[in-house]
Length: 343
Image (cartoon, rainbow, N blue to C red; front, side, top):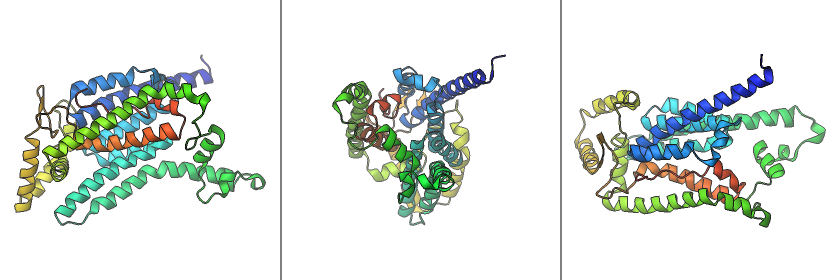
């Protein structure tokens, strides 16, 4: 009745809008899990849905799927469902090339576990598994580069090979960005692009403010508790909040019970670790009827150490948006700041 093209258009809009709603839901649950503040998480989710750039999430574009797989993958990663997280983060790289950066979150978790293993004088197997999971997240990016190289450079016209085919590291996407879009370090610093820098200034300003603000909070956090105590508390699962009304409890149930069983016959060092983690968690504040695992003191403006990889990701994308890529692109959400614990 509608025609093939019309059905494709309608299907694309429906798919992207459903993915947009699901991404917002994951964003809310991830924010609650990390920040332990449902109010801040709700406000951040509303801002995520109702902003001028949300048109990209509702149109025929890959942004919604990327947001869904990225936010969903991070939620499951910090909930303990690492296999599901790895798959979703890899799918985010299938939607957009910068999804490969999400492997950094897996590396962050692996480093924490490796540090914990070193303290207990165990083999740092977390580094091996972290490397394998990170490589899996990178696979879609490598697959796309290989697909382009085989089709254009190997099976294409050998008499008119594109310049990138002869490069030591042939990257199709990088060549397209540089050759056709003018993407490169300081290449966008032109007088005629000043309106685009002004257009991007609100998102960039919020991003820079978030980075500076978290740096100050991190300094305050380390004044009240040591980084050793923070890492122990994170690895022991005391910073991951299991809500009765969500599936976080289901995701963590097996891992927490396994961890408790393994520690049942622990030695003095294990007891000391429990004492350290318990003393750190005792400083946590309460948000309504929900008990928080966030390590804070009397200062409610502190942020947990778990926010660090998000800030590092934000810092990298902010630097890249301002100095390398078309700066107005950050309006689409590449530079959206992490919500503060106080909203």
